[in-house]
Length: 133
Image (tube, rainbow, N blue to C red; front, side, top):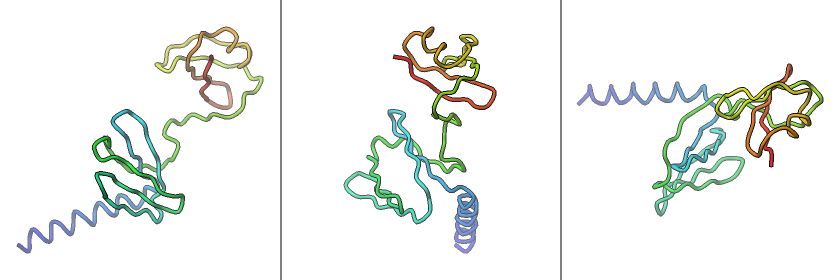
């Protein structure tokens, strides 16, 4: 019995130590939607088949039947891609699958040449995504 309690204490201590370095918790639904919450002051309540997470930013509710996974992360930006305003820099254009489309003088020229869809643009200073309609 003492061994079991000792093992449980070590396990929970290790989990707490690992989670301490990660300031965000990511929730992934079965449809692929993700929600990132700060773990600071984060509390959980399970009620009526839902996981209710509350922190300083507000309250989020997740259906337990649709919740696929949760994991800790150090970065709130899961894509690593910014969505800032365009500039007049030369850009390389890629599909979301990573296929290179080509190089263009700037974002405006690229948009005029592309079919409808989502694209990743890479310039000398940044990488970002665009949607062409």
